[in-house]
Amino acid sequence: MNFMIITLYAREMQKTVAFYTDRLGFTVDAQQSSPNFTMLRPKQGPLLALESVDSLPVGHAKEPGAMELGFAVENVDAIFEQWRADGVAIVSAPENHPFGREFLAKDPEGNYVSVFTLAGRP
Image 1 (tube, one colour):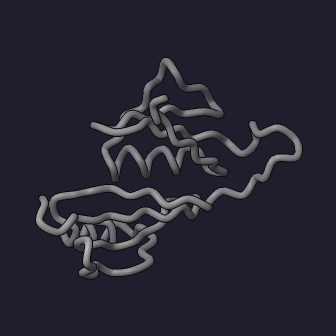
Image 2 (cartoon, rainbow, N blue to C red):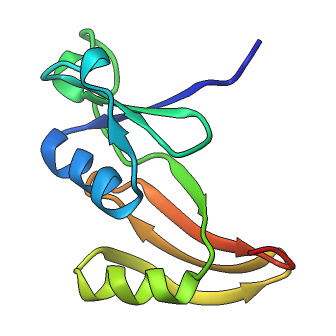
């Protein structure tokens, strides 16, 4: 069994797709996407799918914003400054932790996005 995909539910598909493509470098896989579903491919790691809450079956929760995704980067502080200048919702400024340096933001749907550099690694 291989872990291959994470699915996030979105109220504002275009805005959320733009966040993951513009900020995190994911690319849209148009062949696997539709108006209510977007397949995003990272440079490495599992796929990320965005699905409109409007496509969920009756009775399923329709509240996005309950996930935290973590992204390793080379320079936490540079990404933080760029995102802050661009108006991304910042939860916490960069801090040092035993595991490394991290800041926390939110995507347009309220999901937490942890941006970090592990201690002793780029």
